[in-house]
Image (tube, rainbow, N blue to C red):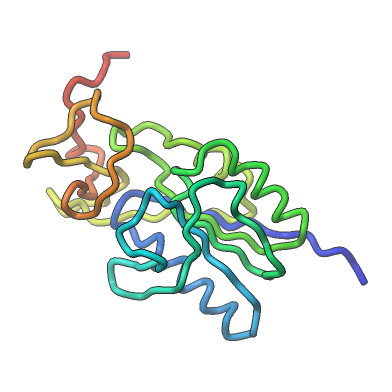
Length: 189
């Protein structure tokens, strides 16, 4: 039997762009043909317990892990990884190992942090992708094409020196276009 090489599909974008919904849609296609699958999500995102849930309410069961080395193929044909930006650089060898084992791997994550900067391991994971889906949302301020994630604290844009990670949904974040995205205190280049 021929050795099978895995494929990596990365789904990236800003908050509210539909990353989890797209992951669930793509995994549902694998379910139709009987592929075994598993989704992993980082423990820092405790909003939906053991579920990967889209803003539209579609969901699939997920395994919650706190480190990338706890992600394994475990005999599954398809492996989904949610919120990759939280896993750090250790995710790269894990993904490479899954691909070497012949897994079909789907990874979702924010490509930029609230400052508009590349977010964690995502640029590296995106560069390894066989297929890349870059999603946009609708700007919650002007209704244009949103590519950025705006953090809101007490009704105002979060300053540059805010902590990088603050887990939340619509209570802390909005999708924004580049013109409406604000980061007070941004260092001048």
